[in-house]
Image (cartoon, rainbow, N blue to C red):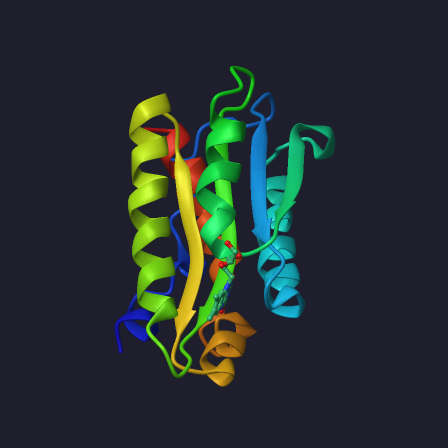
Length: 158
Ligand code: RBF
């Protein structure tokens, strides 16, 4: 499985630049908040571990993953914010809602990132069931919040 082979929890930290003065906006979806809390904590811990200052990390909640895009835009448009990290969990149900939400978020975050020329990382866990989501929030497939933060740091070092 792709994520089993590419677990960015083992990311290469060598090329990360200094982020001690960087400001990070986090947007976290409230749906499946028990899981998004774990993902978000992973992201925050990673930023702190790499030298970000606690007061430079701004965590914001949105109702669901669909709202991640607007949340990201409201942060990215602020000049002082250097990177945005988006965290959500969308679990497949009986209908195609997950396709619509996931595609909208992927496209939306890409647009925001390109519009503001800032890293906007995609910490959206999209799974077939709850177990797969838990596996990616501190379980056997690591913590995708860590990976989202690492991606943001790596892009700041680009
Ligand atoms: N938001 C999530 O973050 N994860 C979900 O798994 C999720 N499932 C949804 C299922 C349905 C049928 C609907 C209508 C919404 C769902 N949402 C989910 C909420 C969505 O992201 C958004 O917050 C709401 O649609 C309001 O715009």
